[in-house]
Length: 307
Length: 157
Picture 1 (cartoon, rainbow over the protein chains, first blue to last red):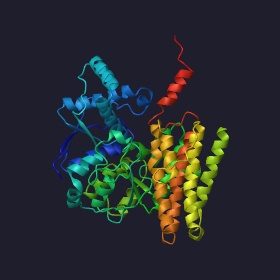
Picture 2 (cartoon, rainbow over the protein chains, first blue to last red):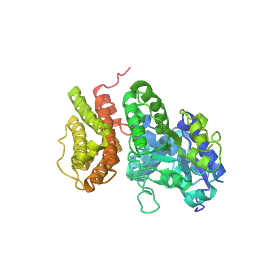
Picture 3 (cartoon, rainbow over the protein chains, first blue to last red):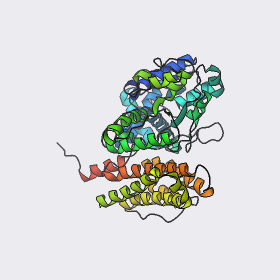
Picture 4 (cartoon, chains in turn cyan, brown):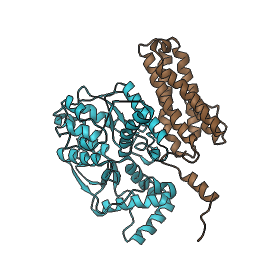
């Protein structure tokens, strides 16, 4: 525990106000129970994922930079983001503003037009919810607070594709011991192991979930998710832990769809890492929003003395 | 052409499904060969992607593996293709585990997991190839949209 990140600005992003509501709830409740402060950005806007970025990446840089500018105005030097898409986009904006004069020019012009100051690269650090818990509390701090150990729970940690890609926008990763790895991320594994869980070696932890095709090509998404689920089960996992609302919702929805459309039933449970950590430190399943997940895992958790 | 590509991805996927479903004894009996076949199937999938994009698949190797060279070639100028970077590395890892110690008690499981990893690669690339224009997963559909915009400029009203 370093004392760092005890109070941070919080950017939930659109998903966490919709399908990822349980992630929003569990992130806030976990922070509160751990004695950490989060202050939501005032009047935040969409980060520009993915639709805007695909059409006009500089406009996406502006949209993300406006959120960073709000954090700066509120006096914060750190903004914590639980959603992988938002996290990726804020990091990309930071990188673009530091390295691309064209992006700076567009952001400056649009910021003036919108009537707020232009965000300056380097003023605010964007961190993921995983960085937040890992740095502010750490494994030792977490271990000391565990009331309901996750012992006996076999977990496949699934990070999805945007938490580590592209590598150049995450200059703090791959810095050796203690830092996060872009090729084999482990922060979620570390935290859940500290809470007593047994992590399985999951070879698809950064593979694509097909999230972008959920609506446009559902069959491809269903097949990709089914392979993620069956591989997790083949690795011996009872639970897939997630840290991205898009991946999480995709896994839940396509688990149901795989059974309906392909006749393939899987039983592995899907839970946010914040829900698992919350229950480990004594929060109820309801407090961390397990009832708000699309898939049913309350009975499974009760049987293991959790929630 | 698109149908032919699709069939070949399906062939690869069918072979991988066979490996996943095979009994331990069959996998163990042919362990090193099947491990090498996993790599070859992975290469075949990446070759399909490159050929569909009018590129000549490289015969070079990266870190001793053509699979990794093909992945790097596919990712050049196409950020979304990097979403299969670690999948390719996991495939190499599982192949190495089996080849270095084919008599290991976990060999059948390692081969099965390797086949599941390769299946993800096949689904990912197959999904990209299946419907023209869907290809650029998540991070980079912009080049496609730009091509569309150039081919069909918006009418000025």
